[in-house]
Image 1 (cartoon, rainbow, N blue to C red):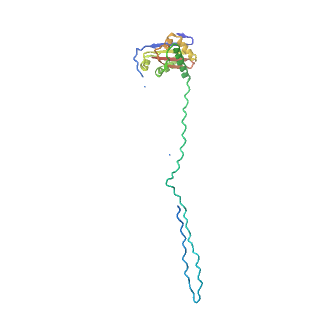
Image 2 (cartoon, rainbow, N blue to C red):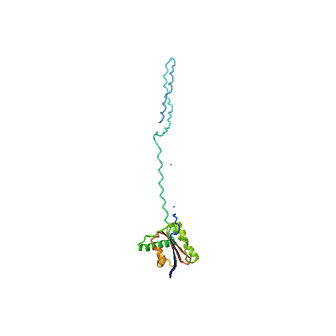
Length: 219
């Protein structure tokens, strides 16, 4: 079904294919000794006066410099421990690119439609995303909408069913893309299918500013 704001295409595939699940004392001073006293002498015929012995000569004392010895129980003072280094601050997460933000809004809008219909939200899954991501730039390179085979999606991602929505729109607002999908019965049916539990979304903006989107559903 054509849309004045863009073009869309839908495809679905049942479980006809096999599903495969993907896992630091000082020494005493010497005593002074007195010198020997001189012997007295006599003279005749008159006695000579007794000589007075000279004062004793004291030997020079030897004073040894006291040597300090460490006390047996003394221990060197421990060196201070270095201050702990502060824990490194993790870098902030990288900002979302324009494509990532566009895809996140597509998912939020799709789940809002499912919630309004009483359905559980779809979980973004790595496996179907691996098929949706490269398909959008592939379509942009060819300049047309097309579907890829869903057999590999079923065999590699598991599940019982798979479907795909593709679309292109020159509007930069993701809501216009989702509105285009919801305005087409086949695309709306894929978005509101209660059997699908996971989704992969690939968005690509070409040099002209046109957005190409692929939605791969699995369940």
